[in-house]
Length: 350
Ligand SMILES: C[S@@+](CC[C@H](N)C(=O)[O-])C[C@H]1O[C@@H](n2cnc3c(N)ncnc32)[C@H](O)[C@@H]1O
Image 1 (cartoon, rainbow, N blue to C red):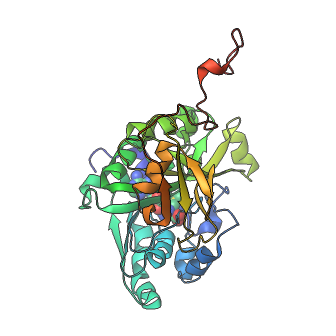
Image 2 (cartoon, rainbow, N blue to C red):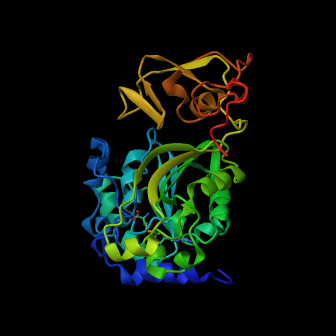
Image 3 (cartoon, rainbow, N blue to C red):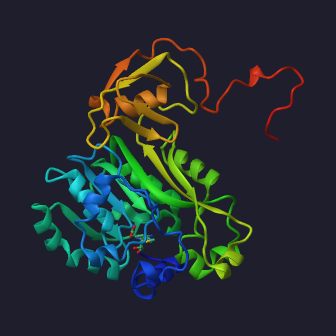
């Protein structure tokens, strides 16, 4: 890339030369939660140790309903998630990993045949490139069902370009499902220039509210938070260097859907989950406030309806209602009417 940002060199150096394995990390920012669904544990058990020991992710990027899907992993590193996802999409699906660090890709590629033999099929591909320039990698626009990324966007020098590029590569109804690190406020410039803090996935992090604005600007109109956990930096020296900021690891899902509204609007609609998604017989988790139990009538706003009806999840739901009649704002989704306060009562915010 012409005029490469300095951070690209230092991040490549960090992940290509400084770190030799997950144990070399100086904080636990890049580290997945201990609780893992059984089916994820099963697929990880089929990933080569050389790949597993170079895992630097911060969450789980394995949404439901992947069978047959075409998946792209932004900043795939040594390929742990690519090889786990390859088993979940199966022989009729495909997983493409993109990374800019040759040493990371060399490990991923060196184990491609081993994994193909173990799985009984070959469905992975690794591409060297920058996630800010997804349009230069020969990937067909509108061709991916799901785009994942695990602890990478925070390292990017142009996060808006990454989100725009991902939106462009997704099929209509596709989703970006990704884990990353967020700060509780905008990171001061001096901190952002600290190479270790940046490489450790801390000081490149977006302030969470700026992320929401960027995501909407890229065309992802209703970002949904799936999980989050506070990051503890178990390294007193680095902890002092980032104080007083605090950081979260969070997984968001961003759907490429036409017609999502800025707020949750109530059209009197509901869905019933059929319990048919593999690994989710009892409940489907759309996000942190939509745990949809199988067989139960579950009222939804218009946006949630579209996230289920106009995506790969449609066959797993029964849909009740339509958009013909509007009942106002959907209660309890954080967008309550401003007119419900008593006259003279102060608003809760500034
Ligand atoms: C924290 S590691 C995560 C790797 C992998 N997702 C995992 O979970 O093990 C960050 C990875 O993103 C890659 N990366 C960072 N910035 C990038 C960019 N602008 N373009 C492409 N890859 C990038 C690095 O080379 C590194 O492999």
